[in-house]
Image (cartoon, rainbow, N blue to C red):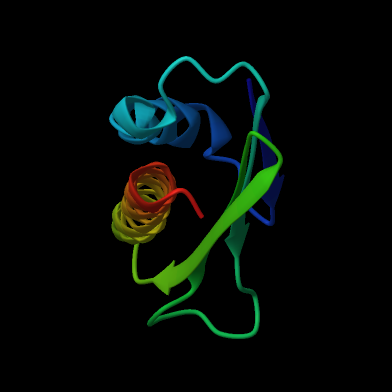
Length: 117
């Protein structure tokens, strides 16, 4: 379930569709996890009129762990792409770390069985 929030912008409908498509590609890292929440905030920074004024912030909770990404770019689409890339990087790193820890645990058990310690 994805919750959306918009601050100082009216384009929330189109942005929701784009964000859902981008986050759909992250499902391969999530697997069959049922404890899943996602909160996305779109904001147009009102202090200036040009430059990097479109901000996207995403908080993704997977199995009790928080993965957070934030980006401010010249368009919402660029900010969404940057947020998706950051979340992809965090999820890959987490999966790789979990896999490494499983292998280390398996090696330790094998050593204990081999030498009876």
